[in-house]
Image (tube, rainbow, N blue to C red; front, side):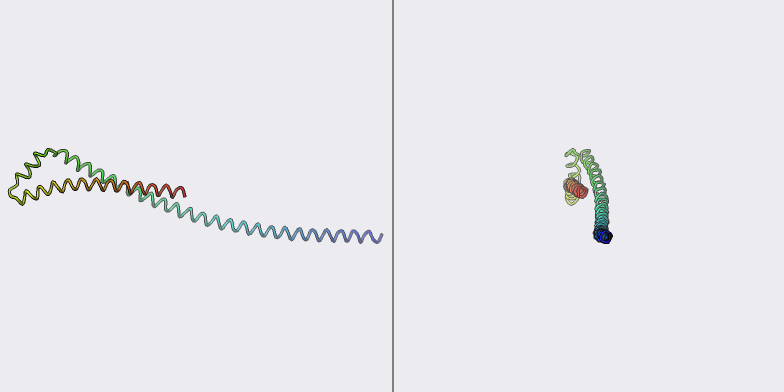
Length: 149
């Protein structure tokens, strides 16, 4: 009977050693999992910061687009008024009479220069509108790219 308790003790010692090994392995796995969770949390915090930066950029870009749209609308409004006035007084006879009714040559040159400047101004305003629309489209494209990112 003496050998049976020794065998049981040896068997229990082996089981205890196995349990200790499993416990150490589980503790190691637990530490690895905790480290993994901490790393993921730091990635989430970093991602949230990047998302916030993108949202701020998107909001800023939206404000720029809004300002550009207002500028385009204003330019179009004034251009329409300019074109209406030019159309209203489009009769070339009236323009020539205005120039020829001048008191002297200097006044006639100033009046002629006024009409030439009016034409240049209309062309310039049209060019400004085209440029503002192009810039507006570029800003909208940048915004859509930001949203995709």
